[in-house]
Every structure is written in C-alpha cells, then in structure tokens.
Length: 78
Image 1 (cartoon, rainbow, N blue to C red):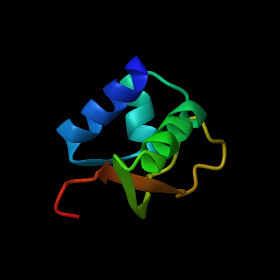
Image 2: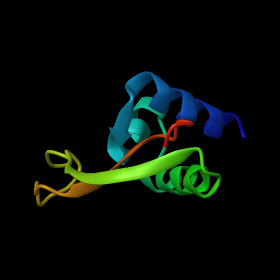
Image 3: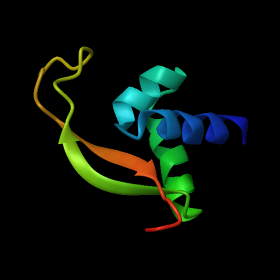
C-alpha cells in the first residue's frame, strides 16, 4: 500500500505523468507501475487522460516513438 501512496503523491506533485516517467521516479518496473496505476484507476483516484509520445526508450533497440498512457489524479470537480 505504501508504494500506491507514493505513486499517488508523485502524480499530485507532477500534475500528470506517463508510465515511464513515474516508473523511473519511483524506481519501479514499468509493468509494476502500470499495474499500480490500473489499481488506482479502479479505485477512482486516478484517470487515464491520453497517450503521449515517450521520446524513445533508451533500453529499446528500435529507438522508436512509442506512445505511453498519461495519468492524473481525479479531483472532486470531475
């Protein structure tokens, strides 16, 4: 549960962020970050707002422009 709170807090500070950025900031795997984000989405605390270009992954041999989901916190007004 502590990592979920850290992820939520990171989104609160950033406003919105994609999975690779959150993964790097929290030192988690992308798969773990995605699973945690989906948990927060199902809890109604986070929403997926778009897919954004990531700029190419350093570890990817293809160096292509992938698209990653962008997330933000759900506020009471939405």
